[in-house]
Image: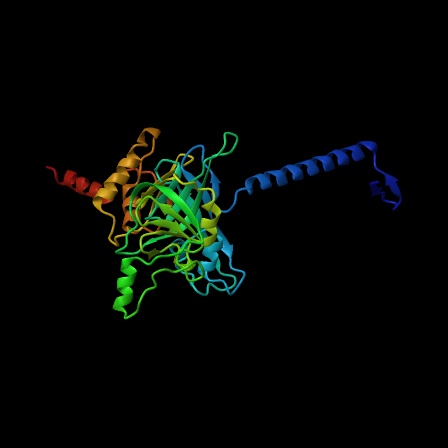
Length: 353
């Protein structure tokens, strides 16, 4: 029972109405705490890289910062734990050492993404972004969602093909048959490539492979996970072993796969226009046609009252960093009188006869 002290030091009972008030406040606090926990559990129920489809706009995820706690961690270790690839983590942290970030270092996690402007079905791969988006089929009572994963793609000379195809077969513990290009390179080194590499730690396909309708191309795991987020394959799409394992049994044969090259992505969040510009795969700057196309897409939203700072947009395309940037409104023209301009007219007026 609650007690209060009198000035004489004698304990006395609190009035009945105080006891009832405290009871009600305690019950209310407990109820609010329960609701808070329930809401937190609801918000955190999605696995890493899984998001409900936005009801408005096309932006998912968040950018946040972490503090390195393990001095043995590399930036690539951190990237893998946070659903990122090599280029994503490096571009977001240009001043952080890749191999020794150091205990206590602050690392930015660029976990906010603009969905590619493509049909939200099956698998969509944006090679410019080095990222895969998977739109799984859901029941009527389930929340529509998207899953996104970092990938590796074909290196220069072994481009990943663009277009629309379908998955044809899923193979667990696949064997790898080195193509003719691998055998030629081996012979040029004075070596002989094996005719087949059985399942195991030396297999570059990893433990899971999803065969595509494009002849000779797959989505597969890897025995070299540091290459995720880079152009490192012979045209196939590589995924972290855990990532492809997570979708392997949920991607049936016949799933649509759309592979696009979209280095400029435009997003809308709560009416705010956002732009994400990635370096072109060809290694050259964005062309004037790319700028015109981007401006055209932005101008389609002018009816909503937005104007855009084209100089800012051009700067983003000239220095594509992959960062998501909010576009500023078009600056208002400067109506402040130019004192020199005014002075000239004043001098002319004084010289008139």
